[in-house]
Image 1 (tube, rainbow, N blue to C red):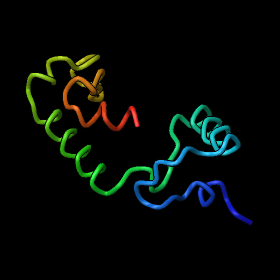
Image 2 (spheres, rainbow, N blue to C red; image 1 turned 90 degrees about the vertical axis):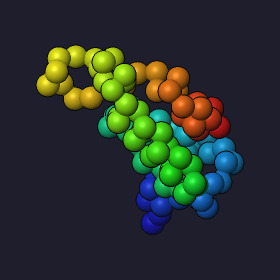
Image 3 (cartoon, rainbow, N blue to C red; image 1 turned 180 degrees about the vertical axis):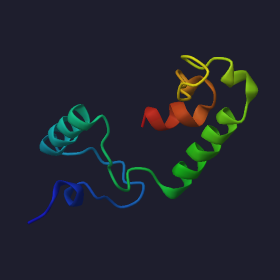
Length: 93
């Protein structure tokens, strides 16, 4: 029997749309759990670019001024797509 995680495995960088039943299951998992791991959706290069962009933001003092919540709250960023084109590029694929 194939699990849902196995059924959503893709070749790295595959940009083909998911079938409607796959999207339904992915959406249901996300709504239930707050996240959904979808292996191989991003290429290795895209992941490297995203990590570099996140590191840049987290290491820049001007973004720390815009943290939402008290000083001891987890670091939360909003509108990340405004900090580096890589975030907008990957969110609009």
